[in-house]
Length: 403
Image 1 (cartoon, rainbow, N blue to C red):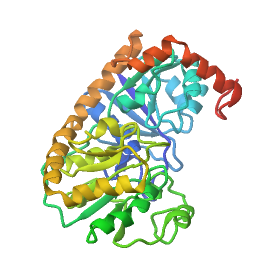
Image 2: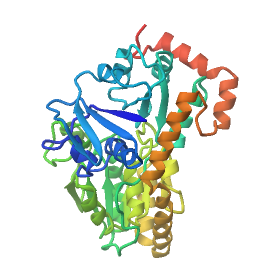
Image 3: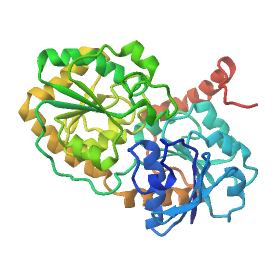
């Protein structure tokens, strides 16, 4: 089988698609997605990354061919019949609408979930499958008539991880992710003074930058937050250091020195369909604190590999962090559980095999290899999914929808 991956994402200056394939770029869902091409190539599949970014150059890396592609749809339509096109949310609808043939051969990779009415249009327009990166993210669509075309294939860890805990350096806390409201960093800033009241010697290292998701963003004096976010939320609390975005191995070495890692604490408006940072931190033997929402419900084993908060109050987030800092027995239990839980996501080979099986199901018209949630089944039987689609189109048409 032949796989084509559209790569429309802007990268930091000096980096390109080959750097992503060779694991030289800080981790993110986008990076994990492109790295899947290397895992499929290692499994014997033919893979091409269609680089549609400005200034793209041809090349090859990790067994994958890289081609500049100004017109992804035209390039795909020139391919043989068994080719599969994988589209990320950034380009999915635009490219699908440009396809005139090859119905059922395109796959949306839902790193971030799309509005249901857009997926409804996409399936009507020839989309073959949509792949969520966690089962909770896929279950969001279970009330809709095309639920059976929504697959769930979690990301896997890339390359070698220590899978051996290191002694943390004091009461060190780390935050990993884009420094933005979408990743809940403002909630951590609100909670941090409360952590310091309980654990005055605690330190917070911030790994990441708004540039992870928005390379062209205007930065504030911190060099990590947007000027707008900084003006709204930053009050210069004590014991906070901004460390920037690090290559994965360097980040892993830093995380192993932490006592606890905080990832997206957003309970509402979360964009965490998976949260690779949470899995990587656990693979380093570090407990994780985050929100009990979306992908974190799968990637963190609450009470065993980390703690998931269920209230948006600063007190609850601060309390979860402080518990891990103060309670040595709890820390040891969670650290051991973190290693065990992360091992579930250790195999790129497993992820590649699941994608190959998904493609076979797509070709044959077989349903997705996951169970429909009881709630989704009930709502679907009541017709609420169809009714919701109709109501959304009538009262609040999505700007990306077309008649």
